[in-house]
Image (cartoon, rainbow, N blue to C red; front, side, top):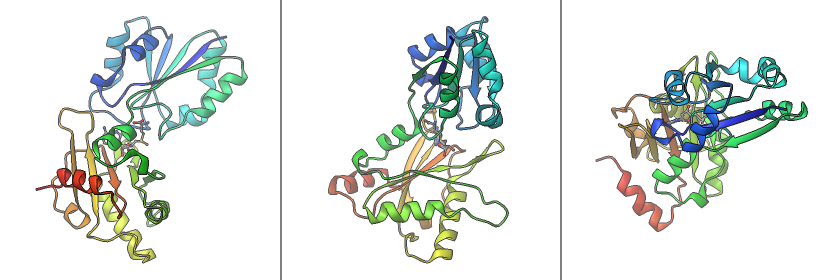
Length: 258
Ligand SMILES: C[S@@+](CC[C@H](N)C(=O)[O-])C[C@H]1O[C@@H](n2cnc3c(N)ncnc32)[C@H](O)[C@@H]1O
């Protein structure tokens, strides 16, 4: 019986916990999940330097972790302990459940080491009440000229329930979507559906490079997004409910761009 570990690294190197390093160091092979999220300073070299030379550190892309994880199961069957290391938290807004259930059905054990997730980090920095967040959703790059409208409907439902919405932004072929691209897609969705879910006067909060030295969290009207000088990606957006508690409105004012 071997151990499959799902290890959260947090958003950047300063958020890597002692527990994460301990579990990484006692693994035989570490796969660094290189597609579900990204960090300003966590990479294979850093993981190798934290864990020593006895542990192999490999990069794991989507096909390997989602469809082609036979090789990982084979290593487990051979008695090796395997760590899947993920930026943020390994189980939030990403899923490695099929790998866990498959490993478990073969008689292996699993361990989850939570990490500081962009989800919690952004809620904390948004000044909004954590009790009032609805379903989160990813804004994905269009396929040709086809736009996935799911974010529009999730936002609509959350707005109807007076809840805030977190928008993750797609990463395709290693390119993370910017807040500007995301807002332009949201406005196109409104143009198409015309259900008055989104207005240029609505205020959003944009988290940029969270956990990095140069992170920024700023609130602005949708109409101001086009002219704002954002920092390089990764970006994340919170779309607050239109009915805010008094204290949330006061908090939001503290984040408004000057
Ligand atoms: C699908 S989520 C994965 C979340 C990860 N499992 C976690 O717990 O942090 C990845 C998306 O979150 C956002 N994101 C991740 N890290 C970020 C950061 N440091 N700053 C801003 N946004 C970030 C980006 O929109 C990115 O495409």
